[in-house]
Length: 125
Figure 1 (tube, rainbow, N blue to C red):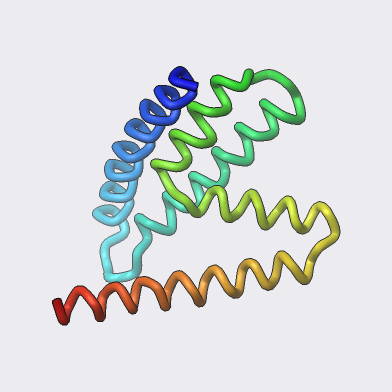
Figure 2: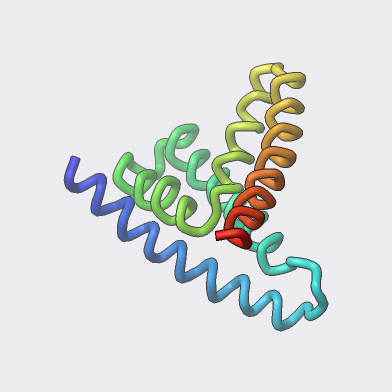
């Protein structure tokens, strides 16, 4: 268990640093007010998680330690959008397209509402 926690921590640190560097670079390169940096890291993180899960579960190329380091740690630190994307894909693969659509809609609306509520609370405290 301690080893797994260390993998998550190390991967999370690398993912967080990677998110900061890549997001900043994309934002500077693209300019404007649209959050291109966040969009870029969310797409990249989703791609990395899909790749890691395929290489570990489907092809058995990566072992459990590497999967924990990369999928939970790195991708978790890089973006939580990657986990959301993978779980939605899993629903689609299972033929649960309605559940996938609900997951997408509720996640987007609830997360935007959550950040709005946090912003409102933060402004009145």
